[in-house]
Length: 180
Image 1 (cartoon, one colour):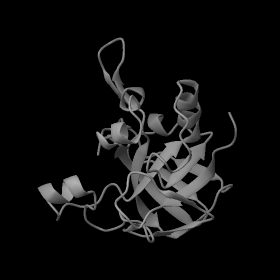
Image 2 (cartoon, one colour):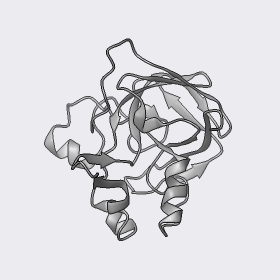
Image 3 (tube, helix red, strand yellow):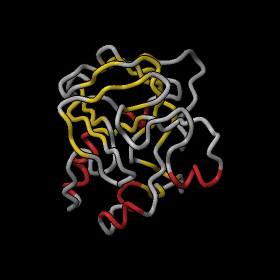
Image 4 (cartoon, helix red, strand yellow):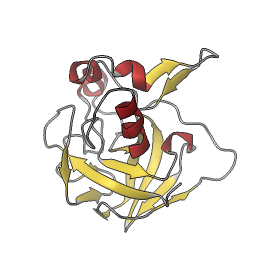
């Protein structure tokens, strides 16, 4: 597996499903990606704002592994980086296997992984049949979510494609990621 690194960065000032690729993004501590509609100390996703707009934003930054894009392409879904709504596309790191509280150091920035992204019906509007590729039940009946992880910004900084990623695991016992 290649060394963990960033392959693409994206953001969108609008609450749109997909985000636009950028040369670099700036992370703001406690807020998220500068200029992104989902940045903020409290929840920014419209469905969550409708329930309780005062809850903390545990979804400031969305990360997806490029390996998922390759897997989707094999299944017949050509999806460009950022089109699934991620801010940071990675390679060489199994994001879905990280425990809750893992810290990802990327350049000067640091992100704490808070949980799994729970994709919604918007993914079906983007590409019909895609939801079944990223959320399904395995042979044991367990729900599998593969649409990336969410995190909060602990330390700000600029992130660019090519930046290395260092994962710092939290103290034991580790807690498996759950949807946030």
